[in-house]
Image (cartoon, rainbow, N blue to C red; front, side, top):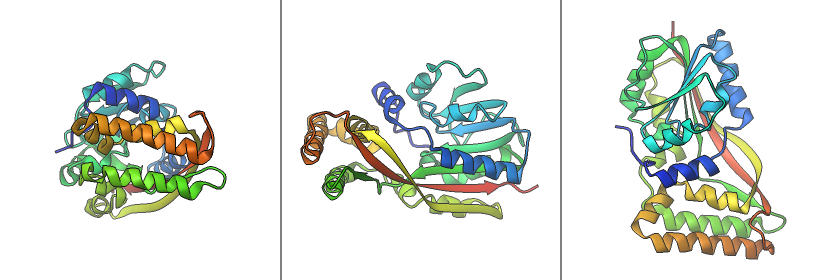
Length: 271
């Protein structure tokens, strides 16, 4: 069964504010794979575990119809609140029971979500709904993020590692699926035509405020917040102060280089 970890309205609001759109490098990789394996027309893309729609919205330029699906009503409500995408709709539901006819979907994708799925049931459902030569594209990032600013990169990364250690007891075993780059799910996909790209480094400039907000969206931080609200809030405040001190700046709008290592599983359903 799909894990239900992102139900709270406040968590959904943080997701909309601080989660990133997929990088262009990944989007182009997926679209090129679909063009090569299936070709046009691109009629229907389904974004599973869509959250607040960061991966759903960019797909609307390339598909006649895009449907985002998430188990969280709060996440879907946040996604629906973003206007301007007439060929995009959202539904509350799971990746293991999809409301589509057999052989009707061109692309099934999931951004930082597939590690929450029930692998066996999801793969069976993907086999059912994908068109012949339809494609799977499942991607995300591990926890080996790096922060740099001038000469204090080591100190900043030590601070982040300490945060990770504090959150470790609150980390779901499902997150290991993301940190293993979906190895088990990849092996469960029965299509002979499949590949797993393990390291796609992406660097972006983010404000300190955005980095701290991003940490707030983590499922393990939210679990810590539920267990001990004052300690979780103090952790973010202390982390922010330590980063500012190390960087010798006073504003949380100051930018840092933030490096994430994405992975991507691609697979094509046979004829």
